[in-house]
Length: 153
Image (cartoon, rainbow, N blue to C red; front, side, top):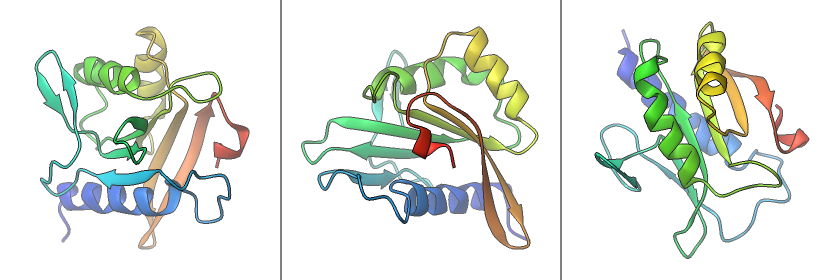
């Protein structure tokens, strides 16, 4: 049996490989670099009041400035305890057309909790998505997208 931690690590890698950029995306900047912090690896973090935080997925420009951040949560981590981390990650992402390029991925069934926590705490985000493993494959469902309509997939 695959552990919850390993499933989350695999989900991080699949999301990074297929959504940053999307497989068919034509407007992805050539100087973007997709980095994952999974399986205990700490490659690119952001500095916060309690030290460095390592988001699941970090998109940098070639000059290492952070452009986008994707955070993948597990079954037991969509809680009030994550609010300050999510705020830091949002604040660390660049602005897209109108909002911060922070994308939150939560397990299917946790979307209402995540939405409430984001909205009630005024955390700016571009997208909320759910993830689920079905028949051995990863299914991503867009819940809310604020900035770029083509990202709502």
